[in-house]
Length: 152
Image (cartoon, rainbow, N blue to C red; front, side, top):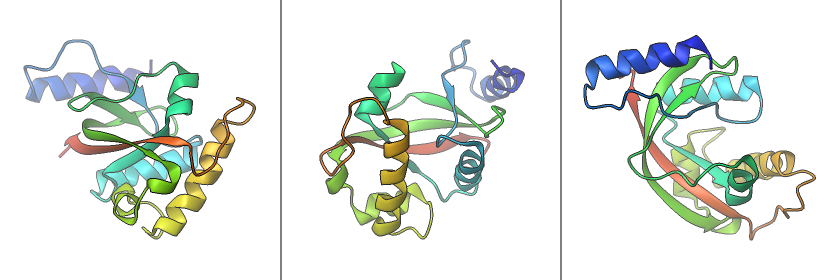
């Protein structure tokens, strides 16, 4: 665990005395450091308020479906904790059912559904490679909306 994870959680708890002592899960967006840094900057700027994970990806990583109210620590591509987010909602949709509004909420690229589909098709193809999962319009996606709770 990067020391910054403990540090950011201590700072969060100093403002939120009701927060549990143990830090929540920490993660970076994307599957590479440059994209993780871009997404983190978008979160901190208030533009990115949603993210999408395939159910297959979560299963392969041994991760549970995010739940409303859960807190998470977001790191940059180097693993340094930079933000705390709270999950607001999670909707399960097929890849083909993700709409323009959700693509805009993700806050990436040119904010269009076409960009979202292209970028996420490439991402899911990379992270599910060799797993036996098929990446197509039927792939189940956890469409998660979140809010930035630290820093504000």
